[in-house]
Image 1 (cartoon, rainbow, N blue to C red):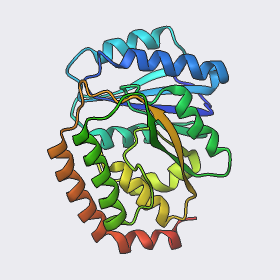
Image 2: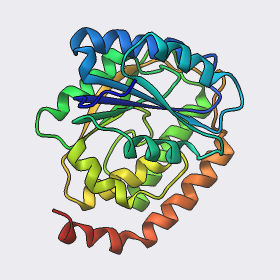
Image 3: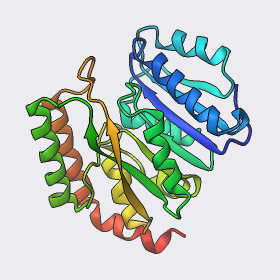
Amino acid sequence: MKILNPTLSIIIPAYNEENRILPTLESYYNYFTKINPKDNLEIIVVLNGCTDATLEVVKKFAYTNKGVRWLEYHEILGKGGAIIEGLKNSFGEHIAIVDADNMIVAEETSKLIDQLSNNNDICIGWRKFHSKKQPVVRKIASFLVRKWTKWIIRVPFHDTQCGAKAITKESNSHILPHLTETGWTLDIQMLVIGINLNKKITEVELKWEHKIENSKLSLFRGAFELLATTIRLGLKRSKYKKLIHKDP
């Protein structure tokens, strides 16, 4: 059921998440309906070329929980493409983006949303505290991503790829028309554009739990996509710098 005037929208991109989406929906819905009236909350699951039973799980949950809805796309949009569709179809004054795996729980994501009320335009998670150790290879990959993005794209944040982010409705309306990245590197493009639009962006330290099971991104493919994206964004740097003079 669609909420007419929600104050909070939560976007969850999902690709074959039948085994992980229900605990995430339950956690986020139960937490946020305790602190927000049900009429003020919408949760949007963007089904991104799913071939499993994710849709059935979401439908069943939405049937008994007001404000939960889904967008189904039969073609694979990519994580970034799914997020873009979610942003296009969100109506909340505040919009949160979270992963379907529930590595960052609702209580932690609420810290990002709270910071939007402190005159921030975009809030991004910094996965500083975790309950389980990451594999060494993953830790090295995360370190290299941070260093690469700071060096090439000059994005001054610790954790551009944290799946939890929050943005105001107004800032979304300014940034969304310029988003083109359909992969996991959409996060970087969003921040680059936000910086060049002079948006106030803050990082919030979050607790998280690393879960390697059913990871959708291989390190090799991720490295190639990061390289391609940073080259594209580097070439567009002068174009993005001009945005600040055009956008209100």
